[in-house]
Length: 383
Image (cartoon, rainbow, N blue to C red; front, side, top):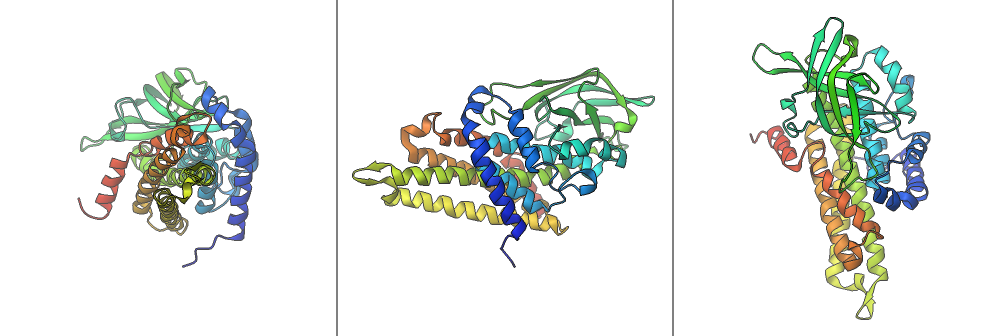
């Protein structure tokens, strides 16, 4: 076993960390307060090469391994969850399905702009009545001549209604299998298509500088050729997409925990009570020791899952474990980081307050902690 990063991976970590500290950190509080998606930082992340990282160069991607991509997400999340969400969803949920399942025509049409970080694409899965039960989606797509006629709605869709959003991949019911199961297929829908509307959602507790959207389809007509891969394979495509997406959520957990821990450590060494830094009190020193230990354990689990994916081994179990553990580790670390800050940790002028809010989505998005435990239990043969 070799736990050493390659020279290229080490350079990538340093460059993304430097970018996040210089370009994102000074704006993060303001963007969060204003609920503003920053086109400026989005374009800057594109110029840095943070989109299409795992896509072949033939389609405009960077051709990197998955661990490199995860390192980049981790370093952005160390500074701000909203920007990390834009990168993670842009790669795993937006670009990923088109790259893995799209036709050559679809890949050449969409991927170059998406990989260059000049455009974004959403993944329309969740519905108002279909969250963890994604197979219960009610959005329908009926084949009408040489077109699909789509009706329904989606909710909580990342990157779907920014000025740079090109469109969404929509999972819809396209029929019924002989055994009565719904036939689910994925279809590409471009923004601006008549009958399709993407509306930004506001009032979020977390990821306030990330774009989250509601999607509405009313007799939305798209060419039959817009189907992604084979008809009826949408549920399989969705599950595989979420498997990979869980790795990026795990990276957000590890990176966010690292950021909250560093803020807590710095504050605890500066803040004095009873004549000495509060970090010197054993109760606080042990909190910080536990934070460091859990972050390291989460990172190793995540990197092992990525290594298995890069080596074309089954990684679903470890992806679920890494997503579950890293997201819950960030929850514990952010909670203790606020505790160490005392009353100041409750004020928005301190970044740790934002980390505390941002961590909550990680145990809900792309499969709740409860669903992850169900997935793991099935994969170990318990149920």
